[in-house]
Amino acid sequence: MLARSVTSVIWGLIADRYGRKRVLLLGTSAMVVANILFGLSVNFWMAVSMRALLGCLNGLIGTTKAYASEIFREDQQALALSTVSTAWGIGLVIGPALGGFLAQPAEKYPNLFPQDSLFGRFPYLLPSLAISIITLAVTIASLWIPEEMTSRDDPCDAPETADASGGDGDGNRAAAEQSLLRNWPLMSAIIVYCVFSLHDMAYSEIFSLWAVSPRKLGGLGYSTTDVGGVLSVSGLGLLLLQLSLYPYMEKRLGPIIVSRLAGALTIPLLASYPFLSKFEGFTLNLLLNCASLLKNILAVSISTGLSILQNKAVDQHQRGAANGIAMTAMSLFRAIGPAGGGALTN
Image 1: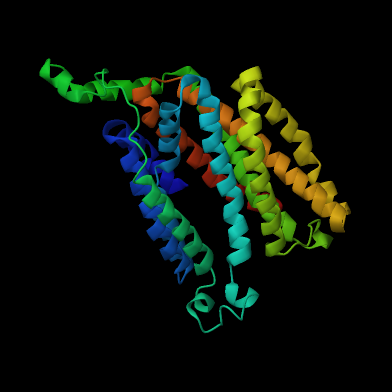
Image 2: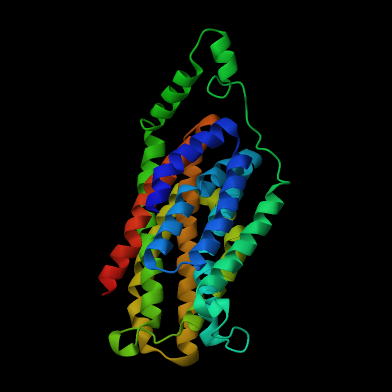
């Protein structure tokens, strides 16, 4: 996250000037390589370095939001950004679920992956390799996506025209990017987005630690496979409900009210989590799956509403840079989340 915060604005500017598709292809290609190298890490610092490399070369999220807002009609913006936020939310759920199922395969599935095999030596290579294979398929499929529908009548998007008339194209672009920092509707949405991102990242960290902690410490005593099962159910339910429910709610209430309601409902929901440890068996599984699904639906509703507000606050030729600024600030807050959440848990 710290590495991503350094380069997100740069990737946004590159996407605005040279096209969204190029940034998407480069980002997914980097993910393929960096994830495999992460799985092959032989020490802690190599693992950290590979994650930092992935963060530096990854301008996907902000670019994808800008791209989605351009290829959907104005009346479908809620569906467009709900799709992106849902995909992001599902990734945050399915990623740890895959890790829970596939990590340490030599211990969990010794008949398939003996201890003397490559997966026995590198216990986290299998989930990393699985993610890289999925990402490679996405990279290949992205070769056929259309270029974004960009307008070229703005001087910031047509430096040749500006220079030909005696203007300074680079100066115009710099002034346009500087104006983003004075755009209060944009910056206010980004501030709220950052605070929520810190909260959501801390929740993701705490949830897994709490679920696998012994019951004598207030946890649930789950295995990593059990946690993976809960997260898988949440991801599937999120996909089915969010794509159908959020566009309807946004059309009726608007993104601001939906985000406020989701934030308000999140407070009593999270306050109820400690009491789940009082239950056991089927009742515990049912309540935990429902709570996890509802939490993820509320989280994606908030992030979708804030993304809509961010993209509506700027012109089309500034969306890459605007989303890059949002990703930079969000990444800084998300970098604090795991350490803060883990420290509070202890």
